Length: 396
Ligand code: 4AD
Ligand code: MG
Image 1 (spheres, rainbow, N blue to C red):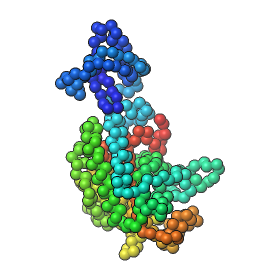
Image 2 (cartoon, rainbow, N blue to C red; image 1 turned 90 degrees about the vertical axis):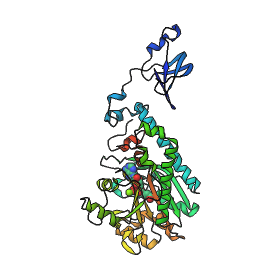
Image 3 (cartoon, protein in one colour; image 1 turned 45 degrees about the horizontal axis):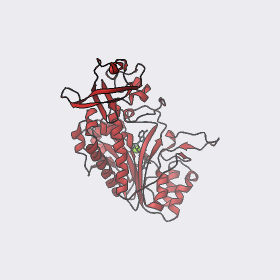
Image 4 (cartoon, protein in one colour; image 1 turned 60 degrees about the horizontal axis):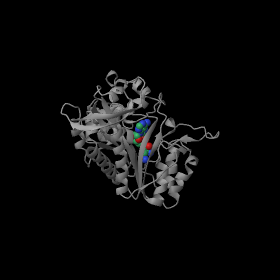
């Protein structure tokens, strides 16, 4: 029989002719055991070693296990229904270990660079990323309470106290379409830094991604092999990353047969086409005002574009980070809020941050599940999360 714990699997040999081991015959798939025995080298065993069992205790005899690994496609709806059990598969075990290293290394990176970790509220009263994807909460009958889409505005408040801050928290988006890269609840690593401009924050982003990928390569090569990930693709991920302006991206896309008008946002198909050939992530810099949320600072030299950038992962994966420089001046912010058809009254405290000693500042948000999806080479974001939530799924 094959035994699993969190460290991996090992083959066990049980001599059924020994009366006190005869009960091994009853053991069903996924039963839990305690055993003692002698570890022996055996080149025929899957891991090169096996345990010759001396003592055996059945702790939890399993009912017939509903999943047979070989019988199901890895992204089937059925495996999502039994995700609470599928988490035991070698495949999920590998993804979860890579995910662990990714979260750990985000903390390592920010702490080593002098950022403070902060915690922001999940109940909020004003949209950060537009009203279309807000989840409304029944908060004692109040109508204007939502789940957060991003901690950004709170991080902006906190830089006046701590200058360099980050948080890792869930964000919520009422994404009405089901795509390979959208969840309704995702993990968001966000940073905000005082006294920085767009270029400064792009450096932080590429250093962060390089650091994470490098840590995964140090710790999780075995897991990447289980996932059949082409590791050579990750070994190349080192800053600096490529930089394209939005205008250049549009030209490349035209040559590939995508006829976007200037001012239109890139969708998943465009991002896939753009990044298919790249061997490293690529920044798309300077999106038109109408592509991005109101808080982005417009470029003083070219006011129709913003000092914003998305970071796209290679191999077709597309956007993993959105960020840029924020508006510094209260009057400029109020005017832009109005221009976007919003009410400055809803953003009073956010505007206050510009009234009492404003500083230039920039920040970004990394979609951690998308990062894990790319690093693991998964075809669907649901595979990167232990208990995914999307428009149809909130069970288990
Ligand atoms: O580009 P987004 O919407 O930017 C923001 O929320 C900014 N306020 C962040 C900031 O500057 N502090 O989201 C940031 C990232 C995206 O690049 C993407 O990786 C991820 O969050 N993301 C999602 N991931 C999974 N499912 C969704 N529905 C996502 N929406 C955004
Ligand atoms: Mg974005």
